[in-house]
Each structure stands twice: as C-alpha cells, then as structure tokens.
Amino acid sequence: MTDEPIDQKLRDMAEHRGLKLLKSRKRKPGSGDYGKFGLTDAEGKALLGVSDKGLTASPKDIEAYLRKGATGTWKASAEATPARPPHPSKARAQDEEPDEEPVIRRRRGATDRVRGPGPTETASAPAAASRPVSRASDKSAKPATRRRSKITAAAARKHDRQADAPAKPAPTALEIRIAKSSDAAGLSGLLRQLAAGNADELGIARNLEKLRKAGGGACVAEKGEIIGCCCWTSIQTLQHGLIGRITLLLVDKGQRRQGVGSALLNEACAALRKLGCSRIEAMSDIAISNAHNFFRALKFEQTSYRFARDMASDD
Image (cartoon, rainbow, N blue to C red; front, side, top):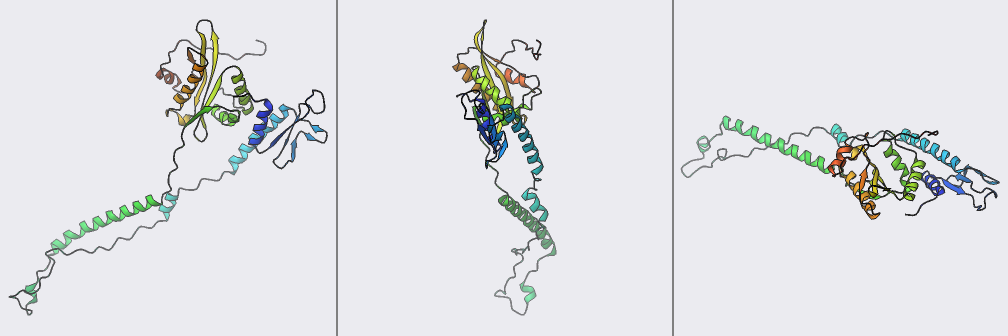
C-alpha cells in the first residue's frame, strides 16, 4: 500500500465533513503562499485561510479547524436525533380489541337424531317416534367444543401477528481488511475503550502511516462499522533473530466472544510470516478483561513481564 502525504489526510478529513481542502500550487519554498492551505464549503464559500493574495492557513490551522468541526458535528447530531418510536407490534397490540368469541354450532350426535315413523308406527304417535336428548349429555358436550374454538382463535391471531411483523434484516458478514487512513474516525471511537488510548483522528492517521514505514501494519474487522483492530510490527533481536510483535488487539465490548479477535490475529500472523518472522509475541493489555486467557487459549505462553513508562522531556 502506498504512503499518503499529510495533506492527503487533511483532504480526507475535509471531504468526510463535506468541505474542500485547497493547497498552494507554488512549488518553490519562499515564493508566494508556498506550503499554505485553505478550506471552503461544498459550494466554494471560503471558510479558512482564503484571501485575495492567496492561501494563508498552515496544516496545524486546518487540523485545529477540522477537529473543532468534528466536535460540533457530533453534538449537533446527538441533539437532532429523534426519540425512537415504539415497535409496530407493540403499538398494534395496544390498539387491538379482543376478538369476539365465534358462534359455536354443535353437531347433533347419533342420539340427537329424530327417527322418522317406521313401518309399524303411525303419525298419530309422534312422542313415541322420537328419542329426546338428555340434559346431562348436552352439558358435557358444550365446554369441550368451546375450548377448542378458543384455541383455534388464539392460533389465528398469533399467525396474523407473525405475518404482519416486519422481516428481520439479514446479519452483516464479518470482513477483515487492511486498515486505511480513512478508518481514523472509526478507530478513534474504538480506542476510547482503552484507558490510555489515543482517540485523535489525525494522530491515528499519522501513526498508521508511520507504522507502515517501520515495516509494520494494521487490519480492521468490519460489520457495517469498525468493531475491532489489530496492529503488528517486526523487531530484530539478538537472541531470536527477526520476531513479530502484536502491539494491539482490540475488539468492541459488545462483539467479543464471537471469533472476531481470532480472525484479526490470523490476519496479523499471516502478514508477519511473509516478513520472515520465526517467532510471534503478543502484548496483552491488563485493562482488557480476559485478554490473557484469550492468548493462552491460542497456545501463547507467558515468557516475560512487560514494564512501561512515559518519557519526560528531560529524560
């Protein structure tokens, strides 16, 4: 993957917010507005660093403006998001009135049928020609018939609700790919789950470029949005030769225990194997719950402790 200059990162961030980055066309240092930038909106209206004499904004001015604009866009989006409407099935259930009980017509049994006059019977004796139905048999037949009708009506209502319910969207397939500079915004939200993560979009874009220049790499896991990332680099050692090191393996809290971490690690191991690394080390973050057991399950052995401190300016 080719390295992109810093002005390309600024251009990507500007386009992400619907703006346009202008860059000086001067190629000779010290001439005109050499090395200067400007910003306009989508219609060409000047926003920053655009004057009659040329462009006046530095890369840091553009960066500060875009970062401030990102915060304002996030707040406006949060305030403008409407409340979520109730589920259609719940709203329908509140408005739905109970169904009326269906009319039950009991079939006559063999004992209910009226026999016609036989050969030896006359029409003048109708009472002897028919056999009346007993009250006991009539009462025992009604509850069973009514219970079957209620069950049938409930099954019909359940079938109607299932038919009217909206179809569930198909789950998005997991994609593992190499990280790009345009992934900085998604990675920024993911890194906020770390206690000491760098959530600055422009800083993340710069670090991705530096990582590639140092012979390392990064990949992301995506399901409609970025849900995980893995970074690696190669290190020349005296005792083991060239080794690969996993410097970051992070999966969103709501997406863990679904094979995302293993898929990211497989991508990193394949890249390090191509670089000629004969050994792989993983840096397991203490702040990530159950991270150590994850690596132990993948046959990683604990071989050392890791110590770290920040470098002060006078160190």
